[in-house]
Length: 191
Length: 101
Image (cartoon, rainbow over all chains, first blue to last red; front, side, top):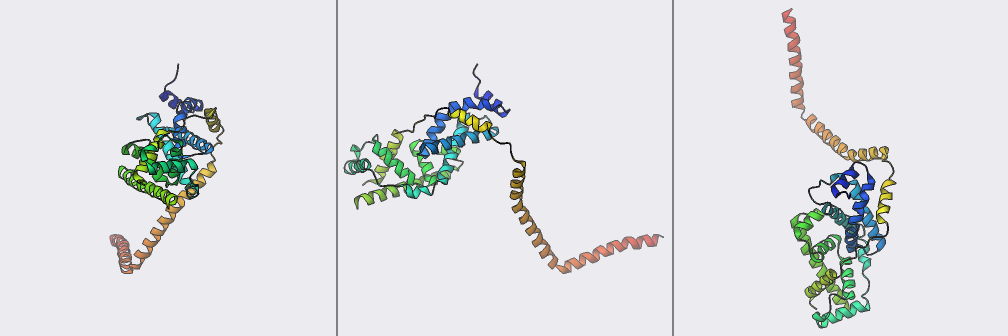
């Protein structure tokens, strides 16, 4: 018979590390998807996922069971991703490269007729990745959670450990920062 | 160019392309291997870390006590009065015991 999550967690806490494996198997897709929002290289994504699971194992005693295990794990994942962004902050300045031809064309189409530039285009996806990579870590995190994952301010506050007013302030600043980056791209392209 | 519209369009693009959730082969085995190969905690290192952490508060307490001693010692009049009172109290006991005999 398959053991429940609570039973697996209790077994791990009693020293049975093997009981951790089904949890890793079940929730790794979510952890990897989260890590891929913040890291581009697959080696970095794997490092983040590994870090999340090692932290989860060592901090498992702090899981009280009043919320689902997945929520607790996602908090750890988001905070680990934030730590990763902060640790790689210096690469941010150098990360921005010239626009590719496809991105350039997409921007031209958007400038001429905004409706004709599809959001489904790969060029748009690559362009938004470049813009997000230019944002400071708190701005990138809040834009990703609020505007891309469409989470509520309260949820973000719980995930990040920031207060609700702080999330709002950071969201406001992040939007302004993103507009500044887009203005720079437009200026470089059209002036 | 309308930057706010561009921002919205790019965020829609990001929403339209959610990241893949595939997990590398045998990832869970690797995590288990990492957990099982963890070396036993080094007690010496744990003590050293704890002592280092305690060093700063200890220095702060020493400085506070030093400053307190310095400033209270300057109040010499009060110090003298205290010593005289103390001496009188001690001698009063001796005097009282002599009278009894």
